[in-house]
Amino acid sequence: MGLKGRDLISIRDLSREEIEEVLKASRRMIPIAEGTKPSSALEGKILTLAFFEPSTRTRLSFESAATRLGGHCVSISDAAQSSVRKGESLYDTVHMLSSYGDAIVLRHPNEGSARLAAQTSEKPVINAGDGAGQHPSQTLLDLATMHEAFGTLSGLRVALLGDLKYGRTVHSLAHALAMFGVELVVSSPPGLGLPEEVREHLDQLGARVTEVDQIHRAVRDVDVLYVTRIQKERFGDLAEYEKVAGSYRIDRAVLAGAKPRLIVMHPLPRTGEIAPEVDATPHAAYFRQAFLGVPVRMALLSLILTGKAG
Ligand code: CP
Image (cartoon, rainbow, N blue to C red; front, side):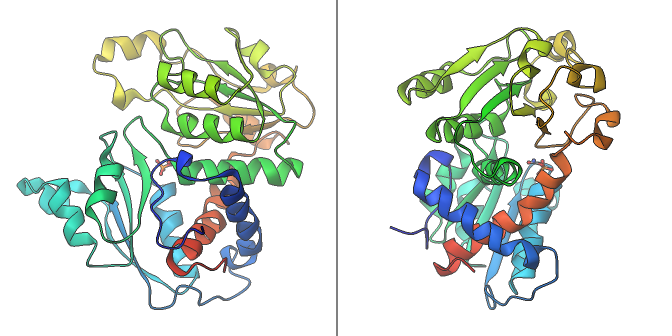
């Protein structure tokens, strides 16, 4: 069916073949993302970035992607500087934005907001994170990182460590990995396990999921260690956050028992879950992962806005 003109609200909106198409296109985009090859694939296109929650990587990598392809961006990067501050609804905001550009990239604190925006907008909407819901373009770059490291996704064993309850990146990623037949190991502080809906969905997909309670056991025998921070901003009661804050940390000692080719990933920002000493090890993949956000989002924008893979 192709991605042209489509919304991307949940990773479940994409088939395995469509994900593979984006990953393949993204590999060809790497020289453009690095600035060594020019492109005008998005000439004349305007991307609207509407961010109502903080972001560094997602917003700037979308902006970099559109700009490297010859397109332009208009943006709301601070809700306090927009008319939301005056009480304008998301419905009205998105209605306006859909006439100011060719696609909207939306980040919003409310789960379901991106789906609502897509129903309102005449232009494609890409969900850049809706509360604790989904973050599908993050999943595409996560998969690209694993594929680049191992040349394949099938047969991998991936550990998801951290706040699996509120971490939207893992909600999206777990689905995609299950679609590719990847075996999952999950480990989280008490009370921060995968939501029931996500667990049931993984069961329906026939995913192999093993739960472990010790960080050392999560690291052993996996190819990828995907670490997430505890999403402090999603806790209703800060005292509950304090109970789990700092309860896990990846350092050289933890990685001593890992496979030599293990890669450590993190959607970032990190807030102490990965010690800086890991950066200098061959395991550290999180900065490469953040870079790959640019070519992956180039591929996605190109397919959605033009129907062509570059
Ligand atoms: N990975 C991610 O979503 O990072 P930002 O919050 O900086 O966009």
